[in-house]
Amino acid sequence: MGADPQSPEPAPIRRDHDRAMRRVGEALADRYPEIGQAMAARILQEIPEYQDAAPELMNDLRAGATATAEVLARTCAEGSRIRHEDLAFLRALAARRVHQGVSLEVFIHAYRVALRAYWDACAEEATRLGIPRAAGFALAGSTIEAVDSITTQAADAYLREEARVPDAGRSSSPRPGRAPHRRPAD
Image (cartoon, rainbow, N blue to C red; front, side, top):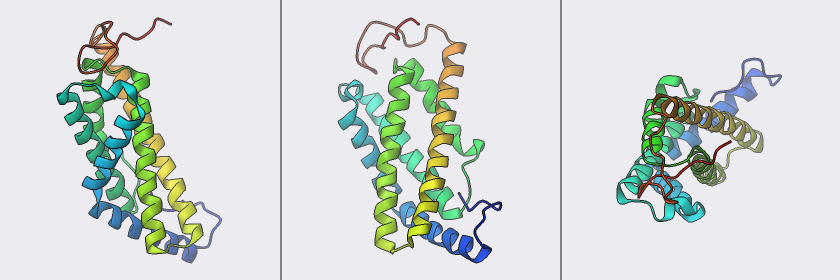
């Protein structure tokens, strides 16, 4: 999540931005369980398909959101980028969603909603810490990059599991976790 070495900005400015972003990441890392719960709450509030889900799916949703908040905060605090190996939990989560009957569209929508909640926490910490505006833009850019990486890996893992077990999680029930949701034919 650090600055791009090819950036046109002078090195001292990039270092200042990196330091400010790491400060935000450290503050987020101290709050990642709270942020994960806020992410899960936002999913439940905004996505009707999750509102009546089985308790096991709800618990898995909260655990996945918390793990996502942790990896995002940790990589920001370290000034690093999300690596493939950081997201093993996400690939396992995506496979479970296939078997829980959550459609790919609903699964990815949940991640987008959750990541907006994460961004709200980023903005809150950046404001509280008084980081410079330019560092805030750098933080936004690195967060967008992380979100792209996470949603891409999530979709890829979901599709791999779906291809591996073609009939996993398919039925006509409209609610995930109760009885699976049928995806429309193309």
